[in-house]
Image 1 (cartoon, rainbow, N blue to C red):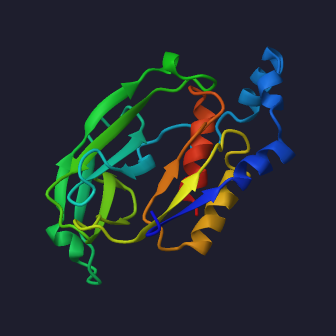
Image 2 (image 1 turned 90 degrees about the vertical axis):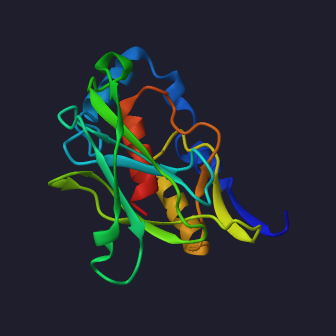
Length: 219
């Protein structure tokens, strides 16, 4: 365990308690409705043809695979994902592999607050080289994300660092984002983030997930 450095951001919960407490849990129905109406149309809430809420994670062996999920409007019925070894050459993507995404439709009735429908896409890149930096992007012709870098794990045990986050839950964007930025400034080579506890306050509230994704991506 001494080889692995986990930076526990316990102060996130302290910030939340000091600035916001748990008043949101005690809001009456009228106040909740007002909050949802005020934030209707907030950045990242309504899906578009461009991919958003892009998350890289693992389904299989992290040394040889990478899984990516993202969201679009329902007008994008087939998503694409490209992956290739990241080199300094600007044309590295010429040898990128292209996969078609699996698509799951999110019905409006499943969303609290902003009643929107969306398509959620997922792919798993397999047969990757271990301990190698790959670049990937997702989307469709004319609606691509930028290229993201990710490094596959080593096949053999070796020291690495990662960031551990406790409950974001409240103050997700306003305070969660600065906690994540602070963690990366102290540990810029962290391989990944583990989110524990309550990611958001209400599981099906669309705007809270919009803030959670913005807090983690806009670092």
